[in-house]
Amino acid sequence: MKIISFVILSVISSVSIADSSWSAVIETGEDCLVGLRDCAVLSNGSAVISMSGPFEDPFLICFDSEGKILWFRHILEKGGTSRAFESNGELVAMDDGFAACYHSEPRATGIDTDVAVVRMDSSGEILWTYILGEYDEDVWMSTDIISCSDGGLLVSGCPGQQIPGGFVFKLSAEGRLEWMTKPDEIVGFALSVMQTGDGDYYVLVNDEYSGSTVVQHIDSHGLVSAPITVAETTISFREKISCINGSFWGFPAIESYVLYAYQLYPDYGTQHEIFLQLPRDSEAGLADIVEEGLLVSGGINDGDALLMRYDFNGNLLWERYYDTGGVDFLYSADFSNQGILAIGQTQTDSGEEWIFWILKTDINGIVEGAGITENGTFLIEPERIHIELHTRG
Image 1 (cartoon, rainbow, N blue to C red):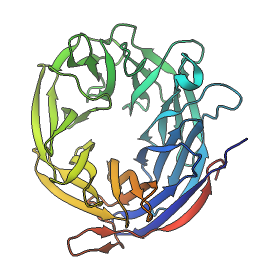
Image 2 (image 1 turned 45 degrees about the vertical axis):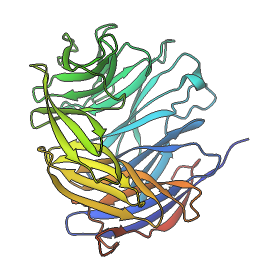
Image 3 (image 1 turned 135 degrees about the horizontal axis):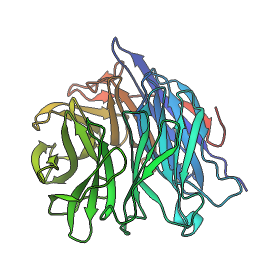
Image 4 (image 1 turned 90 degrees about the vertical axis):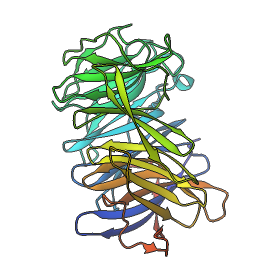
């Protein structure tokens, strides 16, 4: 029997001179196992949210710059096949649209798992789809996707979180495979990729043999160089590497309410550490690294959600608190010149159910039109909109 579930979207919206801000709360039915996976602000100001989960096809929702729903749809529908792209859901904004990256799960497909990259325009139409592993029985899992200066895409991955054997492949702007690294060229778990100003690439790798963190240079034709150690310990499986103003940034760690971010110098095998002091009652993590600085998202013990901006010296530029009336937390965010788009969760009034939450602020974390308490917390009270999850709109 087909499971029918509904998405309830609560939206508050207002427009400032430079940016727009809004908030949405998403409720899913009890039998629906999807979760929010990623968010991205597109060049036209619209916002895309990806959702995926066990037994469900990937689901996308697009809002306009004022928080009104433009479209929603499933992609990569499995139909009568066993393939189910249930994991990842990472998004990357591109000219006139975006790309989404997923991988299938062994639980659903056996030992044969695949990686899918879908290129879409801003109206929600699919331009092309590339699937790695469609015609083999190998195990492929994606860990990162970035857009390239030539309009193409670069994807990293490995056979699984406990299995070494990293890989990187490059797709053209039309979705054609241009090159892929050879087996054993990447020493361990390929975690993240970035492009340099001269068009080459670096991949961040956990080397399980030496117990260290390394980077490997990849030229524009896919030629991989020997690993360079940048840390004597391994890092979290989900950490990323970024190139900002010619510097490499990556793998933050948190200890005693201090977040440690690292500026890397792969050519010399060294790193520079900066310290971000977090509030003593907070739980937070690095959400985005951009030219304007570092963005941290999370929440505090009294139930408010939290966004903070730091410069590249570790100095706090601003911090904002948000309250929807329950227990709120933001676990990821995307910073752009259109503002900040964050995803997280909030607890219902009854205190029994956690539901998904989307927040769009201006570039300074301000939510125009929301109530503000004496201590500066933004009070958000959205209205609700219903969407049937198994339909296209």
